[in-house]
Amino acid sequence: MGYTGADLLVDSLESYGVTHLFGNPGTTELPLMQSVVDSELEYVLGLHEDVAVGAAAGYAMRRRHHANAATDETRSAAQTDVLPLGVANLHLAGGLAHGLGNLYNAKISGAPVLLTAGTHSRDFQQEEPILSGDLVSMAEPFTKWSAEVKDVAALPRMVRRAVRTALTPPTGPVFLSLPVDVQQAETEQSPERLGQIPTAGRGDADAIGEAATALTNAEEPVIVLGDEVGRRGSEAVAAAVELAEAAGARVHNEILAYEVNFPTGHEQWQGVLSTKAPATAAAMDADTLVFVGCSTNTTVTRPTRRLVPDDANCVHIAADAWELGKHAPADTAVLGDPAAVLPELAERVAAAVDEGERERRLEGVRAWAESEASGSATPETVDGTLTKAGLARAFRRVAPDALVVSEAITASPPLLDEFPFEANQLLGTKGGGLGYGLPASVGAAVAEREAGGDRSVLGYVGDGSYLYYPQTLYTATRYDLDLTVVIPDNQNYRILKENTAALMGGDPDEFDYAGIEFEPPVDLVGSAEAHGATGITLESPSEIDETIGEALEYEGAVVVDVPVVDR
Image (cartoon, rainbow, N blue to C red; front, side, top):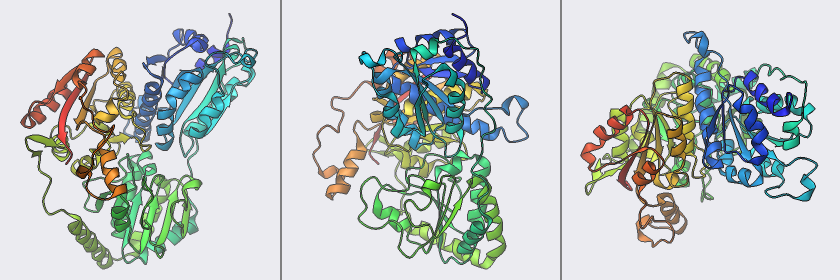
């Protein structure tokens, strides 16, 4: 054959700066796979389609950190052209169906991913061949754009459009179906240039003025930051700090936040809003609320009281028009890039709020924090077993600079309380579908190696999440990735126990359960070693620092099974 559609697809990706293709191949992908053999792309094999999608998403999220850092003039020239895009290829309807779980998580997490799948030739599709299906409709609910390439002549334009759509705010996944005959068709076309990717802009100046007035006149301002802030990098996080300090406001992350939108060691930081409605409603019981870059600020179950007071003055700032006024009325709405809007808003507020008023508000923040404090810190151990807070403190002591990729549903709140995260130091899933954290950790490790960084990648993955795709570790060992996975192992789906109590009333430990506890337990270390990783079980809480430290020093994939109590 001459130059084919598959060759054109690969050349298009390479021309845009794509270096890795995650996937799990099948027969309808074989033309593409042959083109990959002759290319500079590195194919990263996942033993399950959802592993490939989750890894591509984790790779894209970490590459976005690197792309944001590349705007700093102190970075080397080699680091200034970073494409924050993950690309994955799956196989027909069965493979795409397997990948939908993490495609959903990628959508909710705003991960810029180009997902493709081979499909049967167009002149064969009417026969309803094995594994066929309406791939475009299957992917559509979880993507910004879903389409099939029906002719090789359309391929370069559709690939360009797909990549631009994934990378344009609000970022997210896109899908292209690739018929075999389109992949094999000969062509004389070339890749189309990608062009500049736009931001959401600086926002309307009058609307920013109204937002500044609202903060100036506030009695008790509260700022709720969404992950769109962290996605825009350290400059946006620094601007959020400037705004909070200028306004003297209490600061929270939105519900299910998984980026560092504000330094967690800052005095005005008062934690992530809870998925439990009463606690979140109490935190947002203020006269003025400013929501910045939010998308998931709602509870898992129907709240029994309004989360946002009817009489609160609400300011919404977002790069996505869909999010403005979605979860609460927007008395002032600013459509714009938080990285561009926040510095101007902070400057206006700083000029309008005097030091005496600012200090009065800060005293209110301190009083609120004192009222929320439990009075005594959670102990490191209970009955000889490590607590989740104790594990988080060990991370703080041993791995203060690690990149943490978290999917530990009930163990994450103690981590966010105990660990002083800085910008670009945390990734995770906002979607809530289990099985994202371990693949995303692998993708992040690929991205970290590609960037030449020396930051340790620490996957913090609950046992329930880990058991979805333990075969992910094969990918980590196959490609010699430096990855440490720590499993807070409580041998149950603790979140379901807590939600049982929330729905039914009472205490989680008062109920009997079916299908929630892992009895008999799974040998997590044996599972890790079966896939080529090194497995370690923490024998004593007193050894936690030494154990994690040694795992981080080890060059390769390590899994540390840490028994914890539900505290």
